Amino acid sequence: MTSKRIASGLGLLLGAGLAASQAVALEGDAERGEAAAGTCVACHQADGMGMNNPNGESWPRLAGLPAAYIAKQLHDIKEGRRESPSMMPFANMLDDQQIADVAAYYAELEPWPELPTAYHAADPNDEAEWLAERGDWAEGRMIPACSQCHGPNGQGVGDSFPPLAGQHAGYIVSQLEAWREGKRHNDPNDLMMGVAERLDEAQIELIADYYATLPERIAAQGDAAQEEDGQ
Amino acid sequence: MSQRRFHLLMAGTLVSALGLPLAALAQDDEVQRDYQIPLPEAPAGEVTFQPPLERDIPDNQYGDMVRKGRDLFVNTQALRGEYVFNEQNCANCHLDAGRLANSAPMWASFGVYPAYRGKNDKVNTLAERIQGCFTYSMNGKPPENGSEPLVAMQTYLHWMATGAPINESLPGRGYPKLEETEQGADRERGAEVYAQQCAVCHGDEGQGQKVGERQVFPPLWGDGAYNWGAGMHRVNTAANFIKANMPLGKPYSLTDQEAWDVAAFINSHERPQDPRRRTLDTLDETAEIFHDHHGFYGQKVDGKRLGDHDNFGENPVPLDG
Image (cartoon, rainbow over all chains, first blue to last red; front, top):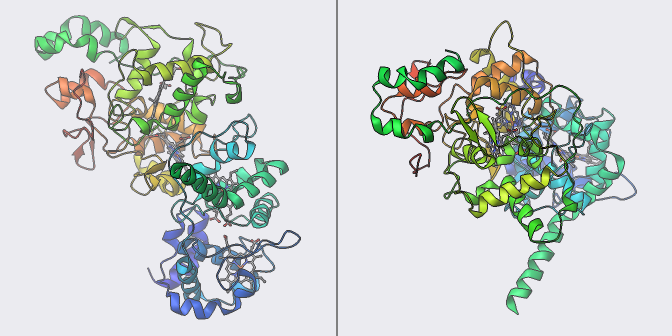
């Protein structure tokens, strides 16, 4: 398939819900990507870690997201499947090759934190952990656990299910709201849209905070456990 | 052949007609301890039963066993290599840790056992039903009666059925039955549904996806999947399950036709051998005795006969061992 056909077929392919990786065939070059990412640092920061802005727009962490996921998002923003007035002009500046390049650059910049994958029972009295690990299957809700798609401890699965743990709380809230308001409609087969629509406002606040702080909390638990071992 | 006729045949002529050795005959009880017959249709009507909440599991020895059972139900992989020889967890086919209505919930099953089954002409206990899911769905070895894994699971089911009537089938039991469609189930059409709606999670080759050692999306065929004896390998059972439960988070979004077609597609792929094949001489015998239903076992697909192999996956255990 030529790259031209890929570009024009992209909307169709993604609309059909194929895995992001299949739509992104251009080979990215991280070095060229670094050069093309010069304008991005204003918001996503030089280290690609983004920033949480409690009183304004939060900028997502990009460092360590899967390259195919980043590329898909940039195409989606360019083509209006994700509406963002702040991001749109910057996505528009990139051609297909540059998209592949910045995607490769940010994917390699700093790995996303790897978190434990072993099963642990969720605490029924911790509403956020319950939603993350067990979901909310009440009638009319039917919300699977976030971890069923975003992986154990929300660390992401493959190219299609981005990590949530360690993403900024303000950004997580904004995305869930974007789906609810119809501003983001780029997810394969609306898998995420239905979940976002059925959450309530309280759950959104809770789960955003839960995932934003999860890596720190797990690290703290690990330290505490090590101290105990040492005694 | 209808189930009833088959049963009559089993009683007499089949044994001589197939020339089964006496050893196989002696094992009939074992071999026929089978949960292949789809569950009877659940009574119509609104699902009203609510299982108790996990925060209300009592803090005592009983409650500890309930939690142990819950953990094993959700993370059955803890028994990998001992009682489980594929990549499955019970909760993969009984969603929300066995609580979800129309996903063969455990609260609806506890009170309906022991149950008489015409097919094996005996009264089957809940323990045997659970053991059946181990042998087939988990491609495993059934935990012995009284062993901790089995006691833990029975206790979990017992707790979940708190307040449910005994010996009465409740709305929400099993998977809701789909009407057959005029076009029938077609694996070619199903391949398209699969590529569009399922592959993003279960993988292009049905291999599922893991993060580290942890299964996130279960494999649907191949060595890690349910075996050729599992209820889910039937096209009708899978279609019922899929319609009400898949794609994850989008129940009832497929048309009946799509559910039938995609069920035919996933179930016309290779998977671990039916363990009952170990006790019989040929694929034909196994197919004739145990596969008189809507499935692809023994059928030719793309020039190859499905089930024509001695790959039992990772399971080293003879059926009666």
